[in-house]
Image (cartoon, rainbow, N blue to C red; front, side, top):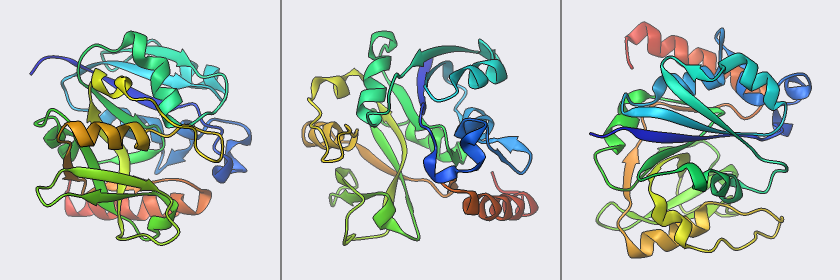
Length: 234
């Protein structure tokens, strides 16, 4: 398989992670002794040879920590001036993207195997069950296992299966206009739904997904990582 790029969204202020994010960006918060961004980059498949990192809040700290090359992978930093949602963040990377790419958030811990599996499909979105789906994007699937839509933070979720924020996309995603959400931001879910109406997007289950959204999530993440290490899972 040819080399690919990964676009990592790391520009957010991390308000829910306060007070830890007063002095550092959320991707540099540590879980079990490692920063979250290290978990993200380590999980990337070997096919990824370039990382496009969308940065904003305390960007220099992230640049100083990772440098221009991380474990043999070149990092291109793209600055987002103000938070306007995932679709606007991804749009900043468009001039540098060629072909298929992985899109991920910089504040979730992922298992490497499911990311590798997702590369088998032209387009894919990784999903997982979540205890409080109303906080996430709830996924609706067709009978053939492809994506129908992702409903962002629904008041009455139809299921507990949510998008992990990780997906395999290509330049087709930029063909679709993204409407502005009522909160003023632009989410990737809308163009993704339009793309899914034209092309099959395979839904891949991610067995190891640990979102770290607030300080209380850190101890839960550490417990799960310890349990995984003891079992020898990857």
